[in-house]
Image 1: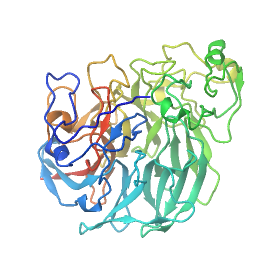
Image 2: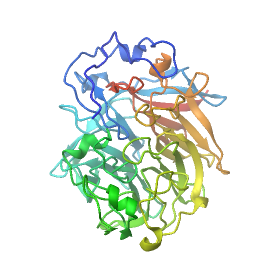
Image 3: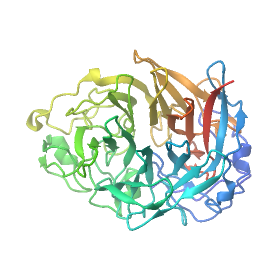
Image 4: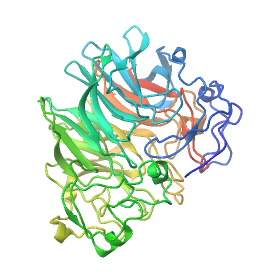
Amino acid sequence: MINTHVIPSESEGPGRAVGTSKAPRPPRSLATLGMTLGALVFLNACSYLGQIAWQAADQAGRYSAKRVAVDDIQVPDGYRAVRVVNGLNFPSAFTWDDGGTLYILESHTVPVPMLKPKIVRVAKNGHIDRVQLTGADAPNGDTAIGLTFHDGWLYFSHEMKDGTFNVDRVRPGGGVVEVVVRGVPVTGDHDVNHLVFDKDGTMYFGVGSATNSGVVSADDPVNQKWLKQHPDAHDIPCKRIALTNNGGSIGAYQPFQHTGATTIDAGAMCTSAIYKLRAGSTTPELVAWGFRNPVALAFDRDGNLVTGMQGADMRSTRPIKDDPDSVLRVRDGAWYGWPDYNAALKPMPQPPVLDLNASNLAAPDASLVVALTKPHAAISGMTLAPDGSLLLAEMGDFKPMTDPNKSDHAGFQVERVDASGAIAPYLRNRNTGDALPASTLDLRNGFERPVDVRVGPDGQIYVLDFGAFVTASGKPKAFPKTGKLFVVEKR
């Protein structure tokens, strides 16, 4: 496990960034937190570990909906960035109801005493409170990821205390939580991610993999987070598969220290997949599988489902070098190749673990790739823009955990994918070279780690920022109350 005994104090700041010659002084947005050394806790943001100082982290009085125009973010000509909400605790998703009230899911992928997943409500007049979540099925785990409004309900994906995930719903006014999908078996690296509805009211959700590349490893810092609590966790195929000699010998699709299986049966629900739930149904249906972590979901300009998938890292038993993130067209019934094909749908450099012929699988169709990011950009949210392009919120790399050998950076921005599949930065902090977090650049109101992007009821682009989470020193540190919501509006 990545273990650190230092949490930055007000004077210490977020530490030295890779590729810089000196440690930046603490940005004012961090320095004003007044953090002190306290309980040491662990953070799983995009499946990586860190620590936070949590004292007074849940003081609602620190929220602010005061609109502040900011100059720290580069935007298209004729537009400006405006901070509309400040002081959020590790948010992951946001949405609006049909009356224009804003809701933000504070994911608390942070197992912090007294903090649990929360839906923050922001009225049009700027008043901020919370949606009360009650009843036997209210969240009792530490993690929540997706949030969307549909047909009078707030739908959200969240962890339960046994480590499995539910998709639930609650009325915007709060009250008893109703289960929509129960007990999705995601007790490993990744979770049930963002949620999206089509025009017919069918809900789609992505389920991430249990591991980086198919094998549970005691040497993997992310596996270490959950291995003691869930020693039987492993990847679950969506159909019966046959393993190669290599796959069986290293324990692919098997619990920790279990090796030698030659075939693995399908699970009632599987990992590394996208599911749909038709309106009025209680049984999810498999759409496609073989994704490592299909975090973001959206419909393109032609109404086709696309997913933003996070590629593999240089860690664990099968470390994968230079795996990009990708935007993929989702085809019913298709297999997308993981763990033997990367996010570009090309063969992995490691020996395969699946016997494709014996598993009745064919190599994935590379024409399903829409666009590729740099490796470890960490696509975390996606939306269809008014001009028909796709916008990607990229949380940014978690070096050195994602790849200790790379000197460049990826993510920390919003990118745009046009109709041809060309990808380019759309919103990013004001600096030259690779996009970098505001805390590295000493910017007061820039992006730290964009996690979601949406088009608001007013037709403008909104970006949710997770907040400061610094990993460059190898001792990850996360900062509460640094999450923000921005809008890009015409001048």
